[in-house]
Length: 230
Image (cartoon, rainbow, N blue to C red; front, side, top):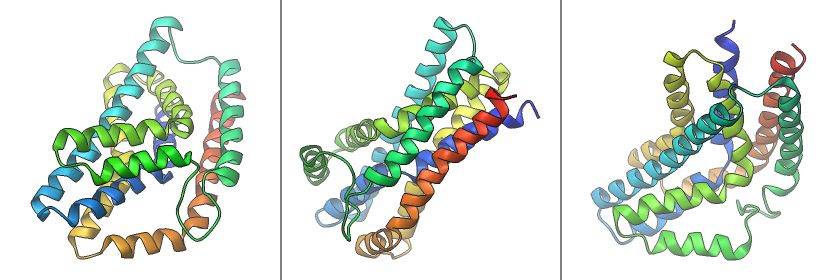
């Protein structure tokens, strides 16, 4: 049971992170721009480096939180501090329901228009592996207002595990985060088009909106039940 709770929190935080749509949307933009001007082998290389950028940012942020918490707090957060984290998760759940998606029949997100245009322009101009990697990092940074609390929660849970399992838990977090992008890549490889996938995203936008908010609330309740009240 002692191992189940931290691993459960890490998995749930990663699943909520994976349900967010900015990083996946950035990958679709890259596909849309690259398939029109590169051979498939080149596009595959760019996409792999984009996903690597997302995963690298996630693991660096996660391990950075672990280091700072261990260095300055000496251990995982106390229940009183976790109560603040629970409140932040609930607040972000409400924000996800209200503000994460813009209104209308599109998958436009909460980003300022200037930032969205910049990411779109960067995706169109990405021609090298370094540019694709940096686009992944940039997109991950733009999603940080919603993912930072998830990474902090996961880092706190990782510190509660025995040392031998901490790297496994961190790897699990990153694997779950990039899983939707890997699935998208396989879908396109099997013949799905970017337009097909975008239409599917638009059709299920409200479902993703609800599930993302529910995910934040579920993580908050999990921490409240097993960490704060316990």
